[in-house]
Length: 111
Image (cartoon, rainbow, N blue to C red; front, side):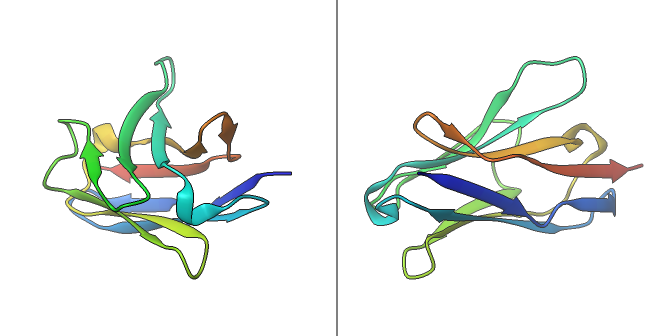
């Protein structure tokens, strides 16, 4: 059974930083494409960033230059480093692998 468990969310002031973590189990992590998505109140879930098993990354235009996705195959964990946070980054952030989703972690950025 594949499980994804996110952590690292919280309340931060605009301009601050947070690092999200997603620990996985029940899957061959090193072979998986991993992604971070987010959903703000009243909005659809949207892609934030993805990383392939080879380490290639892709970002939404709104986070390019501010967010960095990375992975540690030894720890079965994917990270999302978020810098220069803006109030519009406020959302629940979800870890994703194919059809499996984590429970989400809340990120709130105050102005």
